[in-house]
Length: 276
Image (cartoon, rainbow, N blue to C red; front, top):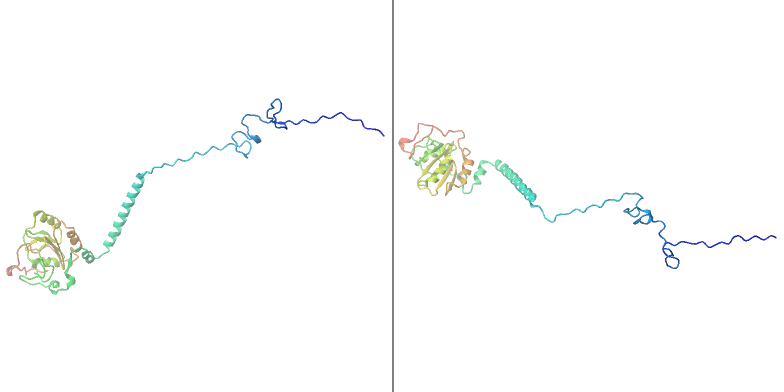
């Protein structure tokens, strides 16, 4: 039985430790890290600047700069928008108002005038009568707004009379659709001039003073009356716009070719030779 020959004697393997020996002490000679290729290299072989877990060679994303929000508020654009809104609302509001006003009858527009008196609503025969009569007549109101009248109308083509005219002729003008503007005799010249500007040259309008008038200004259309204290009162224009021609009892009747004299009616000046 043969015996094997012992082989060469084996030495124990040595294990290198990067930084410390098995006893926690650094190895002799201060060995350098085995795999570090450049300063600043991260574990796992990632390139400098790469995110952990990223693919090798991927480019790093640039950081997004934060947006700065101004603490102040610019009031210029807000003011402009506000002004536009206000103007637009005004235009729309006026359009609605105009549409509503345009849909109203002239009677409704007259009724909206503060202080106007609608004598038609009274159904008074002395005011409603359209009879032609000669000579001086007595009326329910001063100035009159309707009733029996002379067969000749007072010329009402924007005529300005500086002296009182006969009621009997003026009422006939109202029947034809005229607005008779009157003022208290002795009214200040500037007030009279303002009234004259509203009447002069306008068809179916006439102006004259009236003695003992209880207000400075009185306007008449057939069956309607408005008395005010000043020629500047805006209701004067409202009255004219609503009632001129509209209040006529004889639509289409003329205002030209009538009486142009002033003073009261007498038996000798009835004008009975003329018709309506």
